[in-house]
Image (cartoon, rainbow, N blue to C red; front, side, top):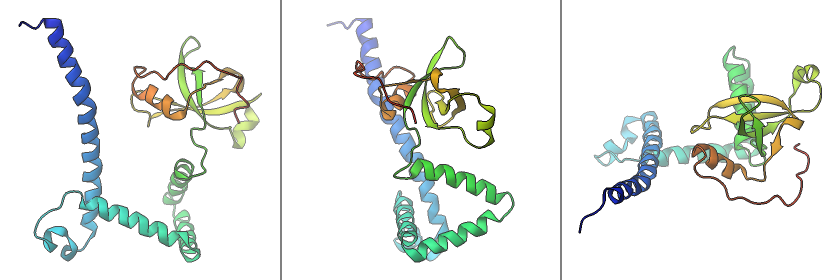
Length: 214
């Protein structure tokens, strides 16, 4: 029985759709595990797995890294640990160049990783990069500092991610009246962006008007 060419093409594309996500996932996991394995270099030679058991154990660095993070979190969770972290941060902030950089990174990480953080609060629809184009953005807060003194009206701070890599993007301050709040979760919006619009969220008719953005 002969298989038609369109059928062969369809079968091949189906195989790609199955294998490409798996390959990318394995590649990312391999990159993460390989990077975390580098933490073994911090151990003394006598503590290296290759010295203890006579062979290299792939992924052992992941266990060491996770254990180290857990121990640091455990120590920093009590009163004494919090005092030590406070002293350590006070020393770092007094170092030129290092201090401002550490402070900025800590502020961002606290916002993104905190259990009660408000990073990426809501998914929005905004006009970007020109008035006749629309894209998805995420609400990150409201403008602050001296910026507020130069803005007339109500503004919000938004992050416009790039596709397919949402870790890079653009920070914009836009009029509240120029943004549309989407009835869409942040996770669904991220999937929509990463897939370049291929994986579209299910259409849910809006039941009521959304409340204030902030």
